[in-house]
Length: 384
Image (cartoon, rainbow, N blue to C red):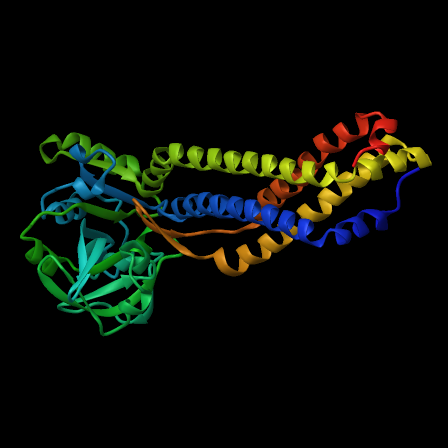
């Protein structure tokens, strides 16, 4: 015969302080799990949505996977347009975007600022970077810059400082903020865009970092790669943009594994904290458990009742943490080496967080309950 369901619920209410402390401890552990899993899911999504399968990136063969270190001739874009037949064209305009991309110190007035990512582009950039859309203001003109909606997070400044009409300083020049843009959550949202020729003048460079080329529907990246291999004098390499960001996912794989390891450590710490709390709770109920056995309740029924109490606490803590995570953590921007991205508390994060929380309730209740049930009933009845 099982103990009534209400028995476990009443037991939690009999010790309100201990119950509250246990609930806070469980909710804190689950919240930490939500933070770490949200970080992993946000990083994975940012890289997954970055890259257009129809775009090919052409940059220096010596730069390996770091486009910021790439330097190619300023005439590369015109040369590619003239030499390749697979470039997408519309109304006589080749969809080719020459770009100068680098990391530099971005400040505002006397503010020291932070390390930002700036991309010098031309009017053809939106034709190739099809995910980019202006959400406020306008395309940057002379002396102006367009700011991604995660650029403030990358710089570590208040988003209000990136308001339209404000100025930012980099490369020894002040730039007026003319617009804000979004890019479906990809890495471009961490960047600042300005006019290519002005950016080259400010940096005293006439070269490019990368040329982004939109392929025609019947074209293949192999054509561009073959051209780069044949023109060894140019020292170029070509890679599909989607492939490029997939390689970055492999590059950040150790970071993701480390984050999952942190989840395991946090969960393990939570289990030990739960064991400590539950041992304290069960230690004060030794006579109660012995009395239940004397009345006629089987050990299995008493064990299930103790587990029920742990599950109620852990489920409540997981629910509280889940609501707080969805309300306060989901969409929060965080800085990272590649730029910035947002924490993502999605279905998988909720499943993992609540799963860890419920497992803490079971694993924390089992050992102390088994220890109490194994003690002789006669000795337990004499316990203080």
